Image (tube, rainbow, N blue to C red; front, top):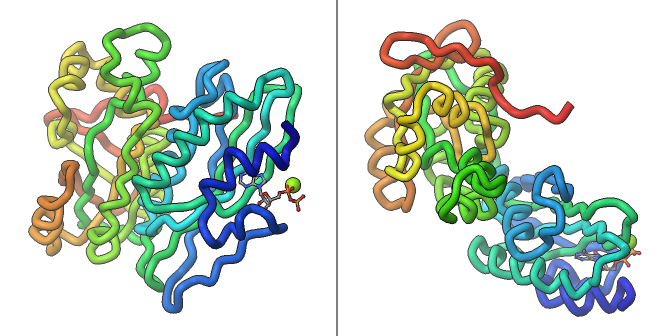
Length: 314
Ligand code: ADP
Ligand code: MG
């Protein structure tokens, strides 16, 4: 099967009208009037971001979902994506059918379509890259900068699924509780109304809660103080939390959680809580922004010390 057959077979069925059937040189998008375009890209390398030899639906879901999480942090509505596939020469391209299935189910769940991409073969590991395109009413998208001293700090959902998912993939824990959450983190797209209306700043938790909160604080030139007892966890995760301080560290620094940290003026507390009632995830008020800089995590009134605040590649 050559590159063109492969595109026709696996990718063309996923195309939206902007993709021109994946038969042209580029996609064509006419942005709606009064909207900003929000773009993001993430790459996944076999053996780095997903286990060697896994090429199916899970990998595709994760690829789109981590990108969707970036759009969620910007309060954007996903519309389309460009996909780059570097496929190992020695592998049967039939394995791409599972990958395409994953793209399809994610597209259906989050309302976006394939607009184009590139397909190459490689002597190295598989590499998948997606560039996502979203829209947001002009001037309404959130940024890492914008928080003020005195703002509340909020977070969606719960931390720990990234760490526990990877621990389960590595065989350190068993029972299939967290693997699904690793491959299918839930991008918090539904938070967009809250963010557009009330948030002063936002970021998604990809590198690690402490690191990402630090990025927001730095961009906004505020300090951030969080009390860990304000973080909520499902019982399955709490069981690990109770194993002690090391586990606490892991949950707060590992990353891959794809929750959204955001800040808002305290006047909006009730509005945020009432909007959250219609969401299928929790939204918790966990701390405050202040003057100065840096992140402080309090356990009771005691600040925790961290060896590392998150994941970096280099
Ligand atoms: P060109 O050589 O002009 O760059 P290609 O032959 O690479 O074009 O691609 C032909 C069409 O197929 C283009 O519309 C491109 O966007 C699309 N395409 C190629 N690879 C992919 C892919 N992995 N996913 C989605 N669309 C793709
Ligand atoms: Mg090309």
